[in-house]
Image (cartoon, rainbow, N blue to C red; front, side):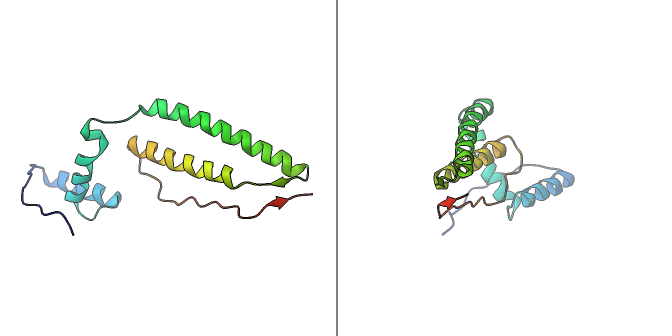
Length: 128
């Protein structure tokens, strides 16, 4: 059940501003401009809690991506040597990093990715 909204917040705007805001709201997937404004006002940016800075998050993300890259190189080496390869955990790490990167990019005011990263490896692969 939606929240009961009995109070009103008004903002004066020009017709051009209203048109622009409506377009932006819909391009971000909101049904109405008021829904978009409500989500902006309740977001972390406006509540004063931005969390870690984007540059710090990107540095940590780069370190994690480097580790995942090392894991992928080890998997490729094992596969080329004919060893059994278990890739589920590495693919899970990649998916987690993709979601973190999407959140960071959305905080940097870019439209978040709408793609769903689904990578699975249910079987053990042996290459000869």
